[in-house]
Image 1 (cartoon, helix red, strand yellow):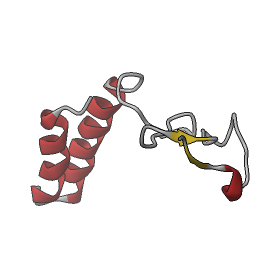
Image 2: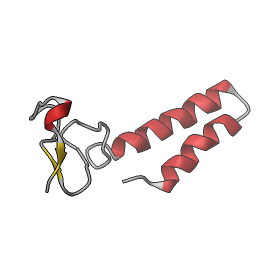
Image 3: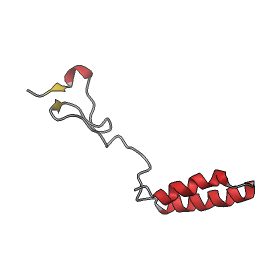
Length: 75
């Protein structure tokens, strides 16, 4: 889940005049981002797989392996 407040906080880092202020704001942004860790997906694993209905012999690579000639459409 993305929080628009986090996006605004991240964008505000470059608007500050000094490096020290930018570092402090970046630390705030990082802390806010890590508060969403565990809620916000950080990795798109191979277990997430989408195909059109009717495609046969296809699946996520970690759990299933086939050659291209064995994949096809169901009749």
